Image (cartoon, rainbow, N blue to C red):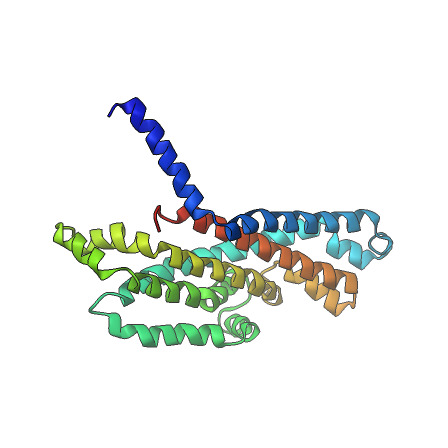
Length: 266
């Protein structure tokens, strides 16, 4: 077959692969969530431009001003993504180790410890971390990492255990090393399950990061704290809405990443 004939075949195969991945549910999620987020942020902008409460109340003006919200959103995203990177860097290799034959017996106690970390109240976990290690950004990141590690760890273990063992044995029969089998067979097949855990962890992190403001780590929790402490209900409502919109946006990004990273045919 000529190169000219092979190229269209490859392009057709790629398009078919994308059609297989994008279900009706995925299409709804991919397009509906961005619309909701855009409408939500547009509503906030309209409120800032038209509300007499915002114009007349100095506290509301300062708490919901564009500069404050942009700065706090940046802090919130930084907390979320740094913690998420640490979660993935810890949980995925640990999940791999706990699915190897020699260390598989350690999986139940390790998952139990991770489960205890998430079962603990998030406020208590963050405050205890601040008491032990001091206030600030990295203390908040450490507490958030402990809190969100379970979904990625559990999904990594489940994903790797769910790989068809005949495929693993076939790879070994072809002369592949254990490392090659892991990288070329097990991890690619387990990736969809792992990515679901990462998406879950991201949503957990966005919500829990609102508590980081109590230990001086910033984030959109500062807006909520201002509204609660000074009894400004518009600040409380819009602070909660902005956090929810940010969580929706991060969840959408996680779904897109999950779709893009999914191997063909899986």
